Length: 358
Image (cartoon, one colour):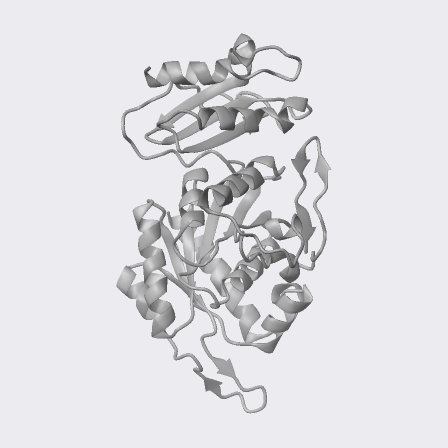
């Protein structure tokens, strides 16, 4: 059976809540279907108040995954068909090999930025939160998504520890923290519960969070990636269209080696590197003002030259950075004037310049 007939068979097995077969209203609901190798993207048209939003996307996903060729499915849900010329277009299933479209989710943001690191412990989440706040303070509309399924830290850092998002019309409503909209698996599970999932379950959880959250849209979506180069990174690269990625590293060699690996991973999935940030670059003595490079210094800047990507800036070690994260009031929400706050402002300015020059 050819691929088109397999899709028709999958759709014919789906029944709506009122008992009506999906195929009887297919032109009204199924707006687009694109297949790229083992990846399928289905676009559904369901009004905001449609009760089908809560059940139909999962039904469609489950049936499409029964097709032997298909391993990954992205379900895009729109309230109305896009205007002519917009990115979502009706298209028949295509089987000729080409790069998978990464446009399923978050299309209502001008820039979707991945903040990543090659290893844990370099302060990537701290950078994500404070960078998002800095952009917001510069007048941009910003959202922040915690994609670290196994070790979510966003609820603690943003002061939303133990809070659950509201659910309206089967959509999760992002939590607001200091002016930015946030979502994390940490706000959906108990804090001390370990998430022990294999790759496919993690992919499904990420996709559900992207699909079922009522993201407000805006200028920037900052996605805090988990460390490393594994399943989550690959899944997100297929589910979203990224403007680019930021690599966070400390200056020492052991971190820089992994940072370069992270940069190579993004290159392989055709996501541009917007720049490298050196975190914990140095410590300034509060009494004498002497700068001490505890983890060496300038290593990330040298790595950026080697990779031929921008160096966005260096962030010093400061006590308030750690305290702010632990207490749920990030540094950039504290109105302090310090070398670290100045560094985040410089990094945000440099990021905007890179994006404007892209």
